[in-house]
Image (cartoon, rainbow, N blue to C red; front, side):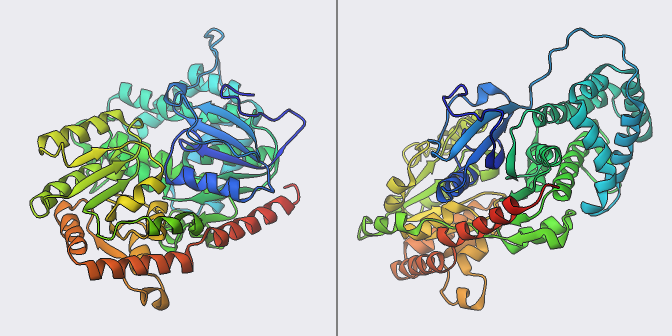
Length: 514
C-alpha cells in the first residue's frame, strides 16, 4: 500500500496496462482525469496500474477520485526529486555518453520526423536505463559536463548571461534524470499507455524500451502547444533585452525558446517510441504529423460519454430557460476565466437577472484564482459571479441556461458533450474541435443544426452577445438543445469509445516482446 492506502504491485506481478499520467488522475480533477477514470472503469476486465508524475508531493495531498477495483497499483514520482548526493567528488564523466547525447541534441535541431531520430535516441536511452544515477551525477559534477555546457554556451548563447544559461540547462535536465531513475522502478506491465508527451512521454519512451512492451500515446490537447502558451506567459523566465537575438524575426527570448524546444524534443521522442499515436479529432492528428509523428502510426478516437447518466437530467430542468451561464473547468490561465468574468460584466447591462457560475477547483494556480476574484470585485460583480469549486456536474447542468467555455486551448472537451447530453447548449471559442462539436463535422452531422454558438478567442463582448442571443430566443435555444442531444447520441457515445480502446489494448497485449 502507498501513502493513500492504494495498492502496489509485488515484484513478481504485472498489470495489463500501466498508465503514465502527468499532473492529472487521480490527484487533479478535470477532463483528462475524467476520461482516465472512464477508461479504467469501462474496461473492468483489464487490470490497470497508475504511475503519477507531479511537481512536488505538497501539491497533491489527496486523491480526487475513488480508484476502481481493477486498479492494482499506484505510485508517485516527482520532478523535484533529487538523489541523495552522497558527497560531491570530482568526476571525469563518460565520454561515450556525452558524444551520444551531443549527437542527439544536434539531431533534434534538424527538421526530421520522429521515427528517423531512433538511431540517435537509442544509445542515450540505453545508457540512461543502465546507470541513471551515475549519469545524473556526471551531469551535476563532472568536468566533461562542465566543458559541454561551456562549449554549447559559446556556440549558441554567448550574448546571454552565462549564469542564467547554466541554471536553465540544469533546471531543464533535472526532471529528465528523475524520470530515468523512475523508469528503473516502474513495475512490469503488458502494455504502457501515456496520456501526454512531455515528461510522462519521456518516461514512456524509457519504460517501453526497458520492458520491451508496446507504448500507446493518447494526446487530448497537443502538449507542446499548451506548454508553449504557458511558457510565453511564464514570469519565472527572465530574458535579457534584445530577445529577438533568439531567432531571426522572432520576438521570443532565448531562454523561452530553450524551454519550448525542450518540450518539442520530448514530443518527438514520445512519437518515435509510441504506436499507436491517438488524437481526439482530425485537426490534432494533422498537428501531430506536422510535429514529427509518422502518419501511419496515428489515428483518431473521439471522446465518448455515458449518455444514460445524463438523460435523467433533462427532465429536471425548469420550464423557463435559466439566465445562468456556467463555466465548468479548472480555474487556471489556459481556461481564460477572466474572459468569462468580463463577458458577465457585458451581460449584466443587458439582462439584470443573469448569473455566472465558475464550477471547478481553484487550488492548481492559487495566484490566478485570486486574480479572478479580484477582477470580480473590480467589476462589481460580487452578486453575479459565483465561485462554486468542484461539484458533481449532475447537480449543476439542470440549473444552467448555457454551458460556456472561454479557453484559449482545448482539444475535445468532455464538458461540452456532457452538457449536450444533459440538454444544455454551449457557447465556446473556436479552439480545438469546439466548432465541430457545436456545428458538426460531416454533412449529415451539420444537418442536425448548431448546438449553440462559436465565438472568438479572448472576446468577452462576442461571448456575451452570443449568450444573450440564445437566452432571449427560446425557439433558437430549444433548437440548439435538440441539436446537441442528437449529435452526442449519434457520434460521441462511451460504448463506441471504449470499444475502440478495447481493440487498441488487445493489439498491444498480444504483441510479442520487442
